[in-house]
Every structure is written in C-alpha cells, then in structure tokens.
Image 1 (cartoon, rainbow, N blue to C red):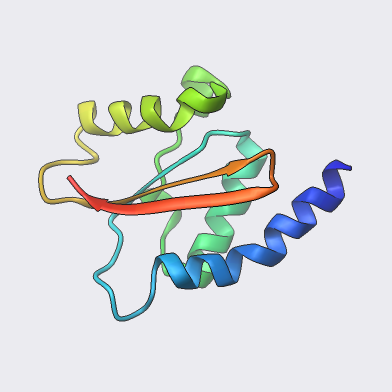
Image 2 (cartoon, rainbow, N blue to C red):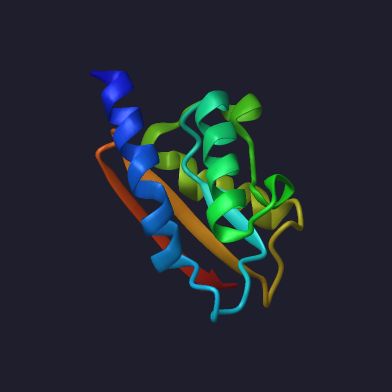
Length: 111
C-alpha cells in the first residue's frame, strides 16, 4: 500500500530529523540521500528544509544521471558529490535513506 507507506514516512520524518540534526549540533552542509525518485527527493527536500534547516541546494540530486540504483544509490551519490567538489575535506554531511519506506537511517559525518 504505497500511499500509506509514504504517509507513514512523512509522519515519522520530523522526529527522525530532530534526532539526526539537533539544533545544538554544527550544521549539516551537504545531504547525500538515497535516490528513490524525483518526487521522493522533492518531498524529502521540503521536509529537511522545514525540520532541519537544510536548503534544497544542499541536497545532492543525481537521479537524472543514474536513476534509482537501489542499494548503490547512497555510495554512488557520495562518490559523485566528492568528485564534483560538493564534499571536500572538512565538510559535514549526512547520508540518509529508507528501506522500502518502512525504515529510516542516517549518519552525519565529516569528510
């Protein structure tokens, strides 16, 4: 039931982002998300802007180049962000993804 799974993910995202990006922590400069779909990236971008002060231009979006590479989308997007210079030494960035919309995971790292 795709619409119900999406609704559940949207409902869980604010609390999840608050735990991953608390206001007292240094800001995340770049986000490397799982590249599910153009629509999914836009929705995630709106939620990140609203709940984590992350602007859409901070989100690496390569879906037009590679499509949904399933489990390889985060590592390949990270590679692309490093190669393109979006992530350099010292950059604080977040890896974030979902598992079939039923689980959320993220890590905030400094390169």
